[in-house]
Image (cartoon, rainbow, N blue to C red; front, side):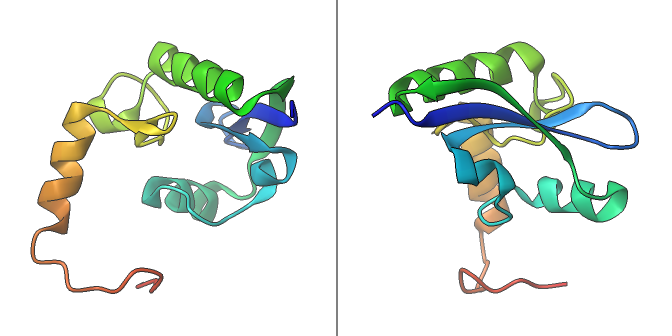
Length: 116
C-alpha cells in the first residue's frame, strides 16, 4: 500500500526545519518516539509547523527519501546541519551508535519513564 509520507517539522520562530520524518499520515502529528532534542525544541519554541513533502509512497520509498533528505540537510548530532534526527531514516550512523552506546553506559532508567 502506498499510504506513507515524508514530512518536516519547522521551528515556528526561526522557520528552520529541525526534523524530517516518514511514516503513515498520522505519524507527523505524534509526540511519541522522538529524539530528546525534538522535545527540547518544541518546549522552547512551541508547536512545530508541519509540512508534507511527499505522499502516497510505499514504506521503502518513504524511508529512502527520508534518509536522503536527512543526509543532504545535515544533523546537529554530527555538526553537519540543523536537524535533531539521530538516525538516517531508520538506520543509525556509526558515530550515532557510538554516542548512544556511551550515553547508555551505567544507565539504570527503565524505558518509557520520562525524567525532568
